[in-house]
Amino acid sequence: MKIKSVSAKIILDSRKEKTILISIKTNAGRTFSASSPSGKSTGKYEAKPYKKSIEEDIEAIKQLQEYFTEEILEEFCDLNMVEDILDGHVGANTLFAFESAVLKAIAYEKKKEVWEIIDSNAGKTKKFPRLVGNCIGGGKHSNMEGKKPDFQEFLLIPESKSPKQAEEENKKLKEKAELLIKIKDKNFNEEKNDENAWMTSLNEKEVLDILNELNIPFGVDVASSGFYSRKKYHYENPMLTRETDEQLGYLTNLMKNYNIIYIEDPFNEEDYESFSKLLTKFPDSLIVGDDLTVTNSKRLQKAIDKNSINAIIVKPNQCGSLLEVKKVCDMAKENKIKIVFSHRSGETEETILADLAFGFGADFFKCGITGKEREAKINRLIAIEKKLK
Ligand code: PGA
Ligand code: ZN
Image (cartoon, rainbow, N blue to C red):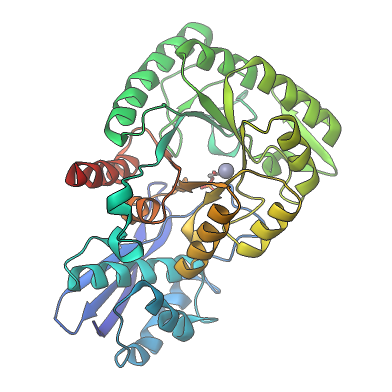
């Protein structure tokens, strides 16, 4: 496959914010497009989404397109050539959308699915990631007036390895959660946040009580870097601060008292040591790095050296390079670290995340439960499941 021309334009994500859509036209005359999501509670160590601005990245793509026309792109590792050309000229969102469009073109040319371009064996092992569905939101993801939970996400994690069954279960439980919130939260007005999770004025303990009633394994994304400053965690509901050792004590307590099997970013994005202390206490729970590791192999290596995590969030646009995503996944597998492919809070209807998760052998797929941008991805995973049956 050869690229004949490239175009890039601005589209709006689910938050009505600008993001990038890349289209490549191949020598066979077909066009393949892909877009990038964008985060709100972004990690400090994430790659920049655009070099300077989205508009300048679009201009850079236009200027560079002639360099692509001679390259022959046939396999996943040929993304090397793409990165040689784009490196240093565009940001991570642009690179991710570009590489996604290239993978779609290669797959079409080879009459294969995108996931097969990553690993054709995935079709034999048929390992589907377990769904991790955002049910209730707080922190930076909630614009609830007044009180709200300080933790950012409360996640349902059905046992089923069938995406179809897990999706059905999550939808039912999200409705049940709504009824339970209604009983306890006088301010509840059935509003949903960016990821289509319920917004509530309850605090995290009250939300955890509700989740306990659902009788399902669940997780939390503390997203603690969002409320960490001057060496303290600043809670608002109730209003209090916790020093690092108090944060460790508080989370230890929650994990002992609730059915929490998964805890993401329990500590600030620099604090590899506290992650490690929590992992030592709870080796059988999932201690997950997101802002800590930002889909970056160097930061993952540090987390491995310090025994900080046993699971890692993979958000391809945190680094932009799918070669780096592969490196992170390979490294995680070698070190028995579970892989959690994840959407972002600002999403498009792009579905390649499902192919990437399946192709890279992800253990979990973190997405919303409802909303067209989230359902599109889960439906793609279900379509892969159906085809392989
Ligand atoms: P983001 O947050 O997509 O807004 O960065 C999601 C997360 O922290 O997991
Ligand atoms: Zn997170």
